[in-house]
Length: 536
Image 1 (cartoon, rainbow, N blue to C red):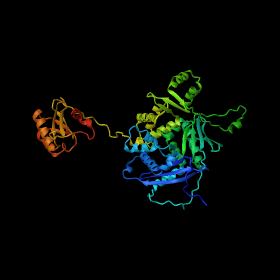
Image 2 (cartoon, rainbow, N blue to C red; image 1 turned 180 degrees about the vertical axis):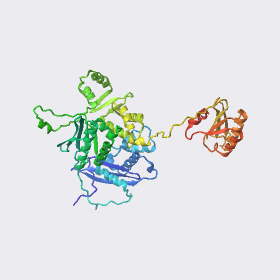
Image 3 (cartoon, one colour; image 1 turned 60 degrees about the horizontal axis):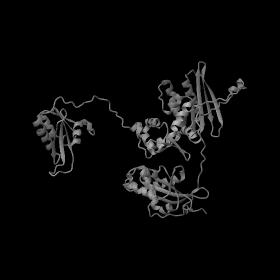
Image 4 (cartoon, one colour; image 1 turned 180 degrees about the horizontal axis):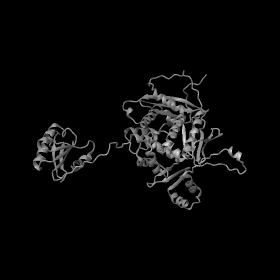
């Protein structure tokens, strides 16, 4: 007989909690590993969100799912260590908030009561069940049954991708191309070609790339890492360089088409080509010789600092010695992790190249990211507690190359036009009008202030009003401006109903002056009136 779907927990062993949040529902799965390192399900949870909860952000919905699981499974949380698996870390989101509202404070109190350890989402099976529960919520009174068939664990062996190295060269006597494939088992498959037509070196590089891609498509090798020593070709394929020469455009388009057929393809610049020398080779063996390709090993910038802090090892370059000794005062190596002390005294964790790229991706466009601009991205990552030497430049480049930011950024697409500044030639020639309020009611029952400011002399006139009506505005212009200072050339008002009406148009026609409306949602268009409002 098969064991039941739901089992009892084993005392003393940690539990695994998978949570998921969809658009309208949340789900959770509580599991535990048995003696055979297989996960057994302990409890399923799911429910629909209320109308107010539908307005939560994605990370807040994950906090809601975790709080829902704690509320229902509190006795499990009290007796075991919980390993939380989800797409984002809801505990870090709540704990890192400087100011907590009532909802975040309630979650904060719930989370800190238990021992919950966050684990990044790697296991697919349990998370898939949590997603399924969130997609298909069940009522609270639903009765569980043990007649469901058991699940078999399917293990899929993932093979490493193939590697393809290409190179092309051209000279006066002709051109050639070479392609080397390295299989997932480490076998080397070399190919060489002679190009019949004379071409440039860049065209020969493209020809070598296209020949290798065509062979990969014929072999149906969909996972491929491509390496080349041509900086122009690689950066054009990655989108860093533009294809300006028309003779390279057709090669570029065809190569992109082949890469699209392959699907999962990674392109990298190969920094080192090594041909093993052999002095005893004859001419025939040289033609059959295999070219060994070796990638340049990138040195982690942290390793040099760690060597000096732990073992006192310095590089041979005198300048590098002085630089490392000077910079080492700001670094600390603790529990196999390098930290840098910031100017505020906070320890920032030092990241490598891959970790820095992941941090920029999460901070800029992740669950909590809001596609910050280039300087804000740098300060946001630094506030999160991370550091690497080129973080300012890397953040600028990453934000500049973000595809979503290029589509949806607040760019001004309107063509440039001549500015129309407000010019007053003599006193009381131009007036700016605005209404301030509603204000706290005075003893006389007044709530608003109607103010007018002369653009030449900065003279101001103001009256108090109980309510804003077009008759009050028209009477103010007639009595306080025209009868006192003469007829102006024009007045500047906003687009509100008290100023933009037929009565105001009749007054302008009667006394012979113009009315200009300021731009909507742009206070600087009537800046003098707004400045006087601050004084009021």
